[in-house]
Length: 95
Image (tube, helix red, strand yellow):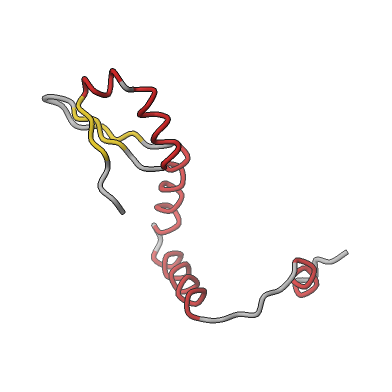
């Protein structure tokens, strides 16, 4: 993860369209510093939704454990590839 680009409030006001386009294009957040107030991060709404979903999925110990086990297994085991038709047949979904 790289450090976010930082703009002053005045710079952000002058470059708001560029900032918005840049955030959407690069998927990299931008921080806007506000004098005397908390800084604001600008990032795509879809990224916020993805983070919220991830937090929800990891919020229960059991679910987090299952997800991390599956991730570990996916990264360490070499599984044979299958076509959609093979997977459907295996799961009894073929018509």
